[in-house]
Amino acid sequence: MVKIELSDSEARRLRDEWEARASDFAEQAASLREAITAIDAQLAGKLPERPTETQATSAPSRLPPPRRKKRRKGQNLRTVKGFLVGLEGKGATVAEITKGTGIATSSAVAVLKNNAKVFHKGDDGLWKLL
Image (tube, helix red, strand yellow):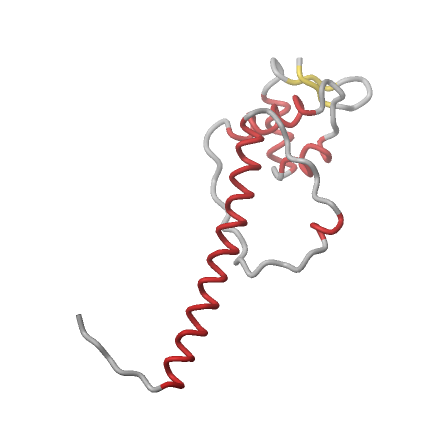
C-alpha cells in the first residue's frame, strides 16, 4: 500500500468531492428502492398510488435520465393486463393505458389488438379484460 501526503487544501477538496459523490449515491439508491417497490407492486397486480402534489413538485433529483431498455417478450402484455386488473373492471382508453403504464401508444394499441382473447373494446370505447 502506498501512502501519499496531501496538502490540507487538496485533502479538503477530495473529501468534499467524495462526500458529494456519496450523497449522490445515497439519493440514487433511494430512488432505485422506490422503483423496485413500484415494480414489485406491479408484479403483484397492484399499481402504486399517484404521487401527491408535493412529491410531484419536489426538487428534481440529480439522477441522469434513465436509459431505455427493450422490454422482454410479453412484458407489455403483462403490464397492460396488470393495469386493467387494478381498475377492477372499469376499463380504460388507450391514452389512459399509455399514461398509466408508460408504454408507448403504438405498443399499447398493438398489445390490445393482438390479444383479442384477453382484451375487449366495449361500445363505450374502453378496453377491458375478458
